[in-house]
Length: 144
Image 1 (cartoon, helix red, strand yellow):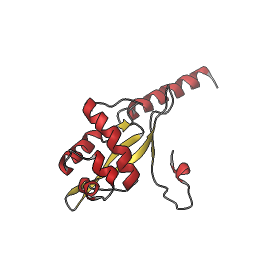
Image 2 (cartoon, rainbow, N blue to C red):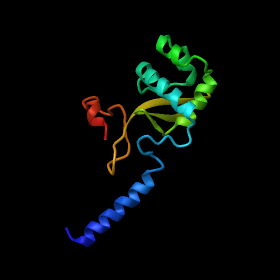
Image 3 (cartoon, rainbow, N blue to C red):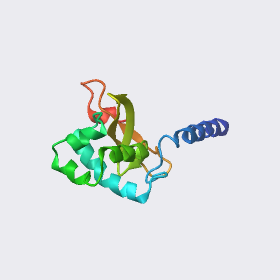
């Protein structure tokens, strides 16, 4: 590989990285989230993901769920406050989880929690892990 080709590839890689950075925040970067939001999300997101998986849900669905774990971590929040918290957290990786906002269903915004794998250094900054599209494909193969 010539030096000119290597420089051109590096320039392209830097351009791609600059476009992706706003979409995939670097590990540990919580953007404009307040510390209280981050602390609460660190407790709430694992519980919600554990009970609801990566399925779409409305904020009221989490409150209606019979899980004691969800009742404990959502204590002190209303469904509306929970939805606002999820809105602020959309697209930000918090302890390996990321919130995605979907369309409205019957007037309620749909949310889902997905795994966000972060790397250090100059490696890939974030990888979303979604359910396999093909039932023959394993979950680890779906993470790219």
